[in-house]
Length: 291
Image (tube, rainbow, N blue to C red; front, side):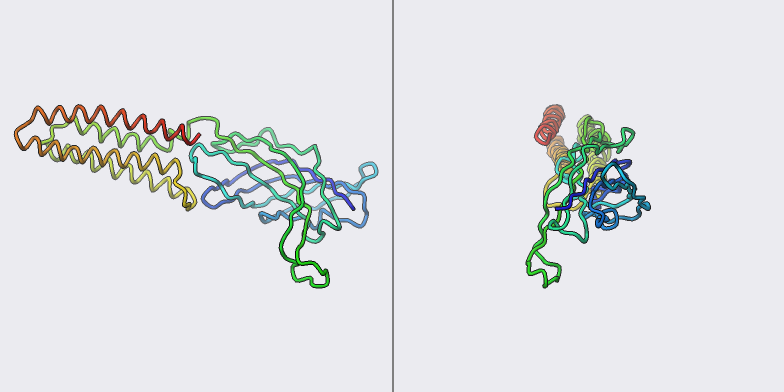
C-alpha cells in the first residue's frame, strides 16, 4: 500500500468566528513519498473547509523519497461549543484527505515534525499544538461509481489539532462589567426614598434596559444554540436581580404610602444587603459550575 508522509507548520489563525463557525488558517503542508506515480500535492483537500489559495509545489528528492511543500490559505469550518462562553476553550481540527485516491490506493502517515509558529497569536486565547494523527474516514456512498461494486468509500485522513485555551478571567470581566454595573445601580436605588418616584424607579428601569442591551450584544456574537450558555445565565441573573429590586421598590412604596416610613427604610436596607450578597454568590456559583 503506497504511503505518503504528511506534516504541517501552522503560521497563522485568523477570523476565528464562533458565530459563523469558522476560522482562517495559513499553513505549510509537506509530503514525502516513494511511489513515482503519486502526486499527493495535487489532489489533497481540506475536507472540513475550502482552500482559497495555495503555492506552486516544487518536487525534489529527499534521500530515497520524493518531497514537496505547499503553502495553503483556507477557511475551515468548526462547530464551536459556546456553553462556557466567555471562558470557553476549543480544539480546532484541520482534516486533510486526498480527493481522488481512497484508502485502498494511498495512506497518509503523520510526520512528527508537525509544529506551530511560536509567534502565532489569537486574541483571547492561548494557542497550543495538539496531536497530529491519521485514521480512516468512511463515507456511506460510492459517489455514484457503480463499477466499484461498493456501497461505501473509505479515505485516509490526516488530522491536525490546535488547542485554543482560555487562561484568565479577563474576557469575563470585559463581557459582563456592564451587567454588574446595572445591578449595582439597581441596588443603589434602595438608597433613594421610596416616595421619590422619578429617581427611585428611573434607576431600576434604566438598569434593566442597560442589562438587556448588554445581553443582546453578547448574543449577537454567538451562534444560535438550544443550550443555555454561561453568558446567558449571567445575563438572566442580572436582569432578574434588577427586576426583583424594582418589585421590592413597589412594595416599599406601598408601605411608605401607609405612613410606615421606618418599615419602608428597613425593608430597603435589608433588600439591598441580601440581594447584593445573593447576586455575588450566584455569579460565583455559575462560574464555578461552568469551569
